[in-house]
Length: 334
Image 1 (spheres, one colour):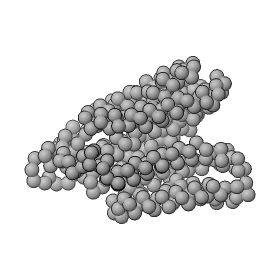
Image 2: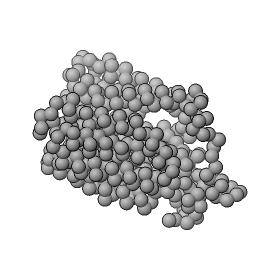
Image 3: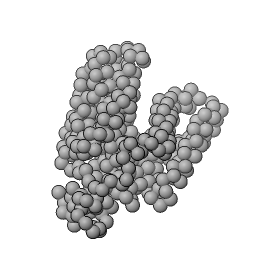
Image 4: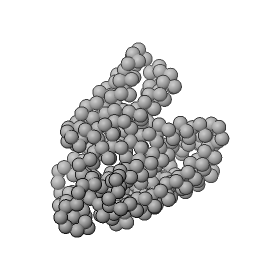
């Protein structure tokens, strides 16, 4: 535990921990398509049977998000993130031994699915918001960038291991890495509030009053007050629509590109490029949101996404290659 006078503000260590955790958590979750394809090839299961565990994971993610949030508020990131990493590691190890679709429903659908709540986007954003005020945007952007970079590196890495050694060994190794790496990392180094180390948000000089009373004071909102506002429900609808849109786009984009006459390798390269742009864009837009405001940056990002989606919609076999890259650049960076 560093002293309050440490040269590096501990909040940036929290950001680094979030980056690494999101790298493995979301990168592994994004690799579900690799596992799906490998198991379908071996067992000949129908698409409906093989996709059910992944649907269960998403439904469980949506249905228990409130519980994960309550556990985070009560027990803090040290225990909740470690529990999420434990679920992920055990889920990967047991999924690697699946013989029937219902095995995968239990292992991937329930265990791996819960890591999205315990160590996914929402709790990491909530944690960083406690450690940063002035630099909140760029801190969140850096942490969330780990998710996109995980997709860029873990997905092709998992595919390489599957092709070289088989899907059972590939996902067993991934499970061991998660258990050995993420669980102790979060147990040892995560902290809930700056006040736990005698610090203040952003590493600012101490204001008057005891640390425990200054830092942990509520900002004037309760859950009951929040749900009674129109802004809360606008945000609720916004997140729901974004989740629906991004998942549909992610699932069908490669097939759509290939059906319009582009090579599968080109389609895969476009997806990789978008993931890189997301990783870079989250940091850039996060920093700009600290200066320009969240609403302004969100509006610009939304417009870029619309431009990218229009490029995808207008994609035809006769379309120029620039339209494909226009989709990647605008949608990925937006």
